[in-house]
Length: 285
Length: 319
Image (tube, rainbow over all chains, first blue to last red; front, side, top):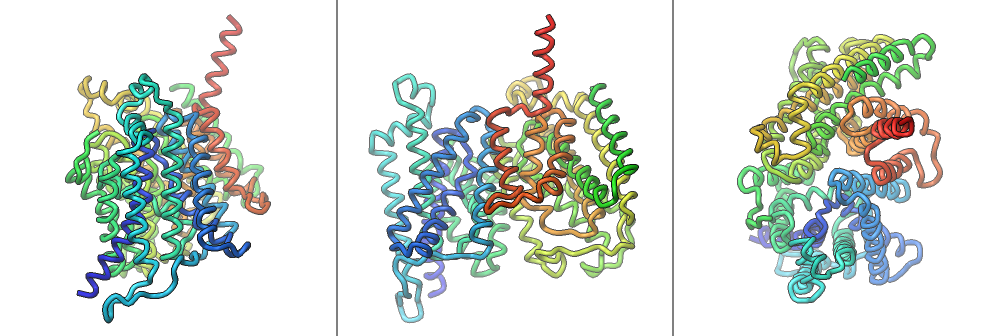
């Protein structure tokens, strides 16, 4: 029983972090039809920047995280700039973003090394929930933080004027241009928000696990599994799918070991593609 | 077509004369570059001709490499087999093709980005098997194949074997690209809907393209192993994938000869000419990735495409 509760709590925390990454990935794809293979860059760079700032300038962890997220947004804008000239050509977009991701990975590898690193948690210590049921406080805090951010994103997309413009562009680009929406601005806003979310996910992740340069690409496995499970381009589908993937991830980790998690993700993806390619929430484009 | 075969023969003759005035140490790395160039050309077959963006081509290279290595050192899985290295190379290609068939059937019947998304994560997934079954696959370092078990031991023999492999496989790929099959591939690349309405079985030809391309990738991986006498996870890894993409994009997608030539040049540049470059965070890989981004943005048709473009300008000027 205790193990199941632990698994559920831990899975929710991981699922929330995955949701922050995948919803941004899905948002960018929905609006600009860009498959952003450099999305993991924002995730890793914000964490590494915060770690660096705390170590070198002994900054406060909150301030360092804020600067880290700002750097993630800047990198998102770089991705926007380098994909702009080739946006019409899907192959070139994939190549450019993948090359950018590997370039950043090499730079991080040469400056920080291959060793796993972790960020000072916002709150340290272990919380005793019930007799033997203990969890690191940071893992528990990650749950409401991630859910609050996701709710804010959902409200922003569905209620605000800018969010409605984003929806309009993702439904029909030409028609949005015709009614006077500045499409380039919508692209920029979308990529900035998504990068900030991925940056925040990186901050949370590196307070719970170790982060290492290869995460830039590895995090894409989970993002892909989530967007295929939830249906490409659907944000609510992605968010729900994130939690399923989170539970699968934690269950795999506890039973088979971390090495197996990629294999299990592939099996999940292949299973969905065979059974229901539009994703379990059935969103059709 | 004829001019491409002539270019292939010219390149092969030039490469076959190289041993006359090149020391063996350089010959060794040029031979590896030749095998790599075949991998790049086989990637061009699926991406440049059939238009399906395969981001996990190294999966099939790595699968072929490990298949051949295990077949040639069967004691690692506790078996006692005696398989001729050439046969094991062909079996490696076949095994890669079978895996590609499975992946292709699942992903290529869907339109859109699914094939790219799934192939992108394949190398990362398959690489984990090396760490899970460490005793068999040797983990991070891989394992080596005893000299008496490999196809050829002397550098000069290996070099000519690689060259022969390149000549035959590129000849075959050129033949395919110009046959009815190749024309159907190109039709699918240019418009899937239109091809379907013409009665082309789109899924069948897309899967066939990935199977053929993976067969060559698997054989090339096996030859890599027989050439280096070791197998290691670097043959699966994403940096190798990006090196393939880099070469094909600079060479010009959909021309086979361009990617082949650029594959050789880029491999030699990365492993030989640029290895002295190291200033802080700048190293040869960072420079190559930056070049790739610049080329993709500035001239997406590649160098080989540029050449034809230049010819057209010259013709216009003459008129």
